[in-house]
Length: 275
Image (cartoon, rainbow, N blue to C red; front, side, top):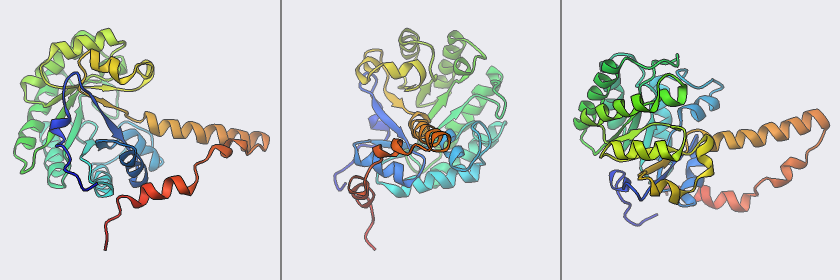
């Protein structure tokens, strides 16, 4: 990959979405890059699973940032960090996280409005103050840093689409570069979200939204489509199905579909830096 790559910010074009490929280790990042990904993101859930932990608040700031640096070093692509709630309740905690992420070389990050490890949202005013602090830290960075502000209440069942729109509009006024309401129900709701703000909008390819293709997301104005933990969970489904067959029935046939080294090794070698 010696050609000049577009900046992470320039990839965000409403109505012409790119796929933000969430990886969970260097190997998966390199595979995704080799197959055409334009940018890589961490996934808090997928990363937590690699550590043997559940999702939503069980990974520390240091662990998350170290993991993001691993992905940065895996390929030349831009990397955005899924940094959960910013690893702290107060705005200063969020600012510290964004400041560190930018210093480490991340090209962007996503901050959500959930008071982890609970599923409850921060009060509206606090949610906005947290985004304001994150924006200030991002703007103070020496590099161009794309801050995504995320409203999770629809996905978690704690508020409706109208409240999500109220929040992302406030997040945009606070200076967020990209807005994100995961799985708002249907494409009609996704369209309303895109129309409610002028900044680029991220959509999540998960749940019922997996039935829609890239063009359908483009038609409603989406600028970016992230995978979240969906691809990692797809690999987990393979493990679950193969494991049940092996340990329950002594059947190893599921592994007949495994991928050979001839396909994987070149992807791993493609991004190796010469010593």
